[in-house]
Image 1 (tube, helix red, strand yellow):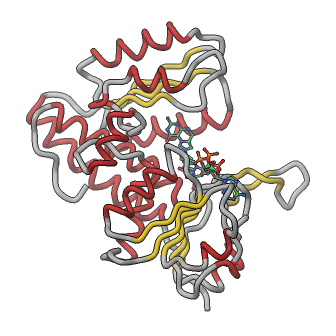
Image 2 (cartoon, rainbow, N blue to C red):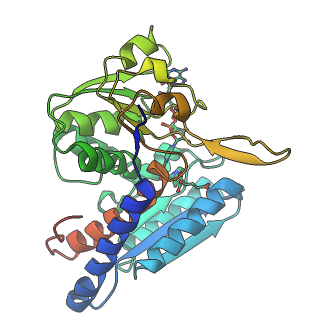
Image 3 (spheres, protein in one colour):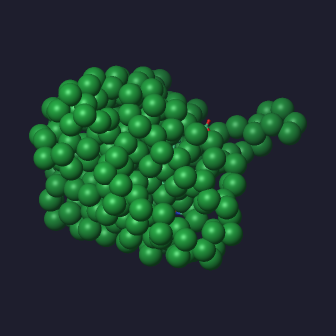
Length: 296
Ligand SMILES: NC(=O)C1=CN([C@@H]2O[C@H](COP(=O)(O)OP(=O)(O)OC[C@H]3O[C@@H](n4cnc5c(N)ncnc54)[C@H](OP(=O)(O)O)[C@@H]3O)[C@@H](O)[C@H]2O)C=CC1
Ligand SMILES: Nc1nc(=O)c2c([nH]1)NC[C@@H]1CN(c3ccc(C(=O)N[C@@H](CCC(=O)O)C(=O)O)cc3)C=[N+]21
C-alpha cells in the first residue's frame, strides 16, 4: 500500500487565497488593512528565513507587515518596551516574537507581555487557558494547521484514537486539546513513555512533534493510520556539505502502512505560516468589533 500524500503546501495556498479575499471587505469597513508585527532578536539564520517568509506571505495577502529586528544583545527591558509599543499601536492586529530568544531574555515574561487579543501565536497563558476550557481565543498556528489537514482528510474525527508524540506548550499540548475538542480519544506520549511503538500502534491518527529525525517507523503504525509529521530537522544531505529537511517520521516506511501522511517539507510547515495570517485576519476583525468571515 502506498499512502496518500497530504499536500499541506496546496492547502495553505488555498487558505491564503481565502484570507486575501477577506482583506478588501475589512479595509472597506475600517479604512485600514490587517497588520502583523514580527519581532526577531538576534541573527539565527533559520529564524531569519522564517521571518522573511512570514513577511512575504503577509504582503502577498494584501496585509501590512511590520518587521522589528533587534540585535542579539538586546536587553529584556528593551524587548518588553517594543512589545508594549506594538500592544498600543492600532495598526498592529497580531504580534509574533520569534522563538527561541537569546539567553538573557526570559521567554515566558515576553509572551506574558503580549496583549492576548493580539497574540496570534496563541502562546499567552490566557489563550492556553481559553483553549483548555473551550472559550474563543487564539490557537497556536502549527497544531491548528494540523487539525485543518486532518479534518480535510477525514471529515469527522469523533471517536478516533489519536496519539500525539510530544508535549511542548507550542505543539503537543495544544494539539491534544484540539483533538479532544473534536471528540477523539487522545493519548500524549513523550520521552518517558515506556513502549512508544506499542502506544503509537493504537492510533488512527498520529501527530509526531518530537524533533528526532525519522524516529517514527512504518512498523509502529496501525494499517491505514493518518500521520501528521510536524518535525523539521535539518540533517546532512546526499551531497557533501549540503543539508536537507526531514520530519520526525520515516516517510518511506510509514507510507507503506499509513493511509495518508504529510511530507516534510511541504506538509505542516506551510500551514503554520498560513494559519498565522489567518489568526491575524481574525484578530483584526475581532478588534474592530466585526464578525470574522466564515470558512477561515
Ligand atoms: N512545522 C512547523 O511549523 C513547526 C515544526 N516544529 C518542529 O516540531 C518538532 C517539535 O517541536 P517542539 O514541540 O517545539 O519541540 P520540544 O523540543 O519543545 O518538544 C519535544 C517533545 O518531544 C518529546 N520527545 C523527545 N524525544 C523523545 C523520544 N525519544 N520519544 C518520545 N518523545 C520524545 C519531548 O518529551 P519530554 O517532554 O519528555 O522532554 C517533548 O515533549 C521539532 O522538530 C520542531 O522543529 C515546531 C514548531 C513549528
Ligand atoms: N513565535 C514563534 N512562532 C512560530 O510559529 C515559530 C517560532 N516562533 N519559531 C520557530 C518555529 C518553526 N516554525 C516554522 C514555520 C514554517 C516552516 C516552514 O514553512 N517550513 C517549510 C520548509 C522551509 C525550509 O525549507 O526551510 C516546509 O516544511 O515546507 C517551518 C517551521 C515556526 N515557528
